[in-house]
Length: 267
Ligand SMILES: [Zn+2]
Image 1 (cartoon, helix red, strand yellow):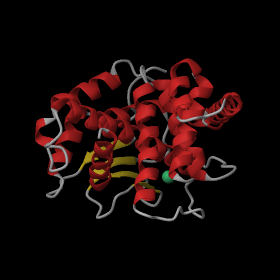
Image 2: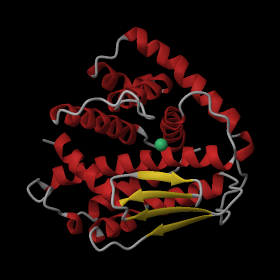
Image 3: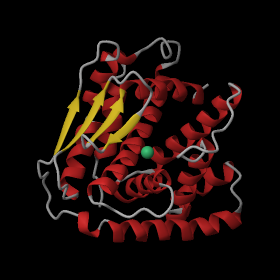
């Protein structure tokens, strides 16, 4: 499965459409830095949406989950991006860098790690992306893994982790796969209006990311119920799957936060 040209078209569109999004955080950056900041944010949006798609698949197809669901869908997101994007490297490396940055920021702000959380710690989520990516494609991700001081012994076991997770998801999704090369019409994409984040709404519309992902999952999975993939103003920094409404929501507040943290990565 290769999403031919998809990533490039999204990234190119995002770069071209930079001007409307010049916010207080980004006006001081050079244009090159600004492009890079938006690319990092877009990479993270892509991985986050795939994480939520993992939740939706588990719910809609009643998939068994052994262990933490959040871990399982983190792995799903990384593996699907590795499997289906022509050039998954920037998406995964930017996403890992973002989790490292979240970890760094929360340390600077003096936050205690939330050991009881349903998610792993930010820094563990960063390493998990590198581990799975390296496990399936060591040539591409070795440098990033080494830079983050991952030892050879662990990188070897990452190969096992990645193969096991990949094989497991393949078995789980056997009954969910849909044969066909056009969307079934089960997934609706909505980029909702927002007074406060209208610049982000426009940008998201312009990249076509939500629409492309919606079409892809509508083509490749046999969703048993109508599903919505939306971007909305939520009043919180979040992205989530709502099983009651069968809806994935990407909050504009999350996009805003990603841009803010992406800027710290470029400093
Ligand atoms: Zn989740």
